Image (cartoon, rainbow, N blue to C red):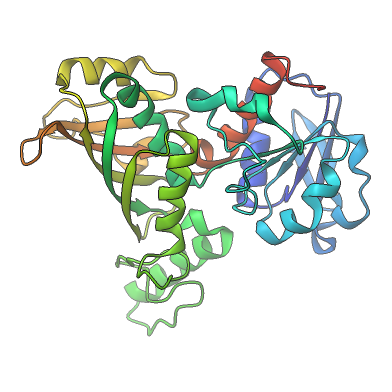
Length: 335
């Protein structure tokens, strides 16, 4: 199988390579693509050095599956061209709400891959991906009516530059130097910023509306969801405080068991000091961790959860590679 990665030198591109290296996909030829400024960069994959080539001049028909990990503008410019002879798995937001493009978390809605019309499959927003994989088993059992979610997202969700700036700002703050934000609206070091993406007329940000719309598309359009998205001075992993109201009565014991048995989920909920998952615990792990499982007695059929996941894996690279695996496993590949 021939595979290409667009944006191979970025955070998600490199993480995609890491995931592919651990998987059993048999890759005949691997093409690493990026802008002209990265051409010639060498990246190691399975003990072999690969040289990054120019995206602008690449013949997309050489690859059967192409991962796009370079942002919406690049996807807008190249994805349709790439999809003429190949499957495109796009990590950007550009195609997510396109009715002709399936938005996929394989553990949740892999059947939607049967409806591929443009040879393009969209990867959801990182904060949505880890949420729906937790909501799915609960929705199947108790039917979710409403979700209130507050996210605590790492700077890696914004790319490499925000990660570098967090380190720079932290050093400056510790040395008592004045900080002028570059990639953030305010100082991120030792702070929390309740603002991710641009504001809309409603007062919500695009990140918050993405979570609402994407959850409805992936899981169930009847679910009501409201979100508040916050950026924290953490390098990797997103955390979410989730309040769920079900239409049906539920059992904590059944809910815990369903979550722990669902593919991609792991319950860590000991109700003791340290008996819960934190962002650091999730770094480099494939699972979405669920903690602080408890009944919300202020509403009928209410449940509270704390969930944590490596956003570069579950929210991007891992989910994208699992989409590719699902295409092949279910014989959608080649259609």
